[in-house]
Length: 285
Ligand SMILES: NC(=O)c1ccc[n+]([C@@H]2O[C@H](COP(=O)([O-])OP(=O)(O)OC[C@H]3O[C@@H](n4cnc5c(N)ncnc54)[C@H](OP(=O)(O)O)[C@@H]3O)[C@@H](O)[C@H]2O)c1
Image (cartoon, rainbow, N blue to C red):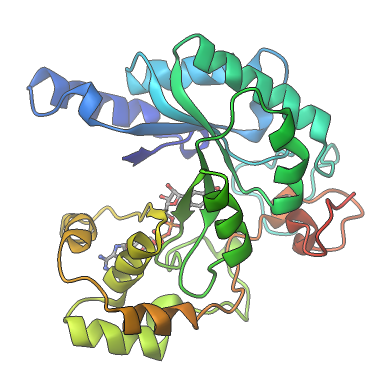
């Protein structure tokens, strides 16, 4: 599984790697599961098709497996913007605008340009508003999930509706940009209970985060550019599982420790990053 996105700015390089692997017969297209996402500045009429076409061209593919709406806002920030940046055009979530974007994603399925479509960075109130209107339901939702941020309600909500949770920042994103760090953030891989379990299995705590994710039922998408890490991240879920007792210990580590707060997407007048996440159970206006 490859978790790509237009905004990551590297799909052309990934496309060359795919092409090379196909040409050398190392792997077939149908053996890969490739996902991409439309960025916030490409939600308008016609733009989603253009974004998908650009991703397919860069990835050198005829179709992707899941096409995601990356964030449920059209709010744009300049690349490298600081955490307190506010774009004057940014607005709170709007159901009609979101559905305009989603309708375009549904048409990508009709056209065979993606097999499935998905959502990302959603909340239960937003899902309650949009799911009944979807002609084609999301097959998966990307959400932040790691031991100190388990989002049990959103996780259960998705599972109950046959929507697969995909967990980003599964290791607690220790190398995320400074603008996404705040003073009280917890570092998952330093939590004593996780370190203890890692010692018992003779692995890095990162590996315990990944085993926990898969055994819980989410698909973790860990990032690494180091071969020893990404190989062990894949291998670890095929061997030496966590015990029920260890799973129960990790369940108790949830501390509502959201790391990707999304503050650069806030609008003028918003109180704080919590406004993006509908913490009082209603869509923040
Ligand atoms: N949908 C969204 O809005 C969204 C948002 C954020 C992320 N994502 C996706 O989620 C992916 C992962 O997120 P992330 O990179 O922020 O966080 P992450 O996967 O939790 O953390 C990545 C870091 O963990 C370390 N690591 C990985 N494997 C390790 C191992 N086996 N042992 C020790 N350390 C290990 C690496 O650090 P070192 O390099 O220091 O070893 C790596 O930079 C992204 O690549 C992206 O695809 C999606």
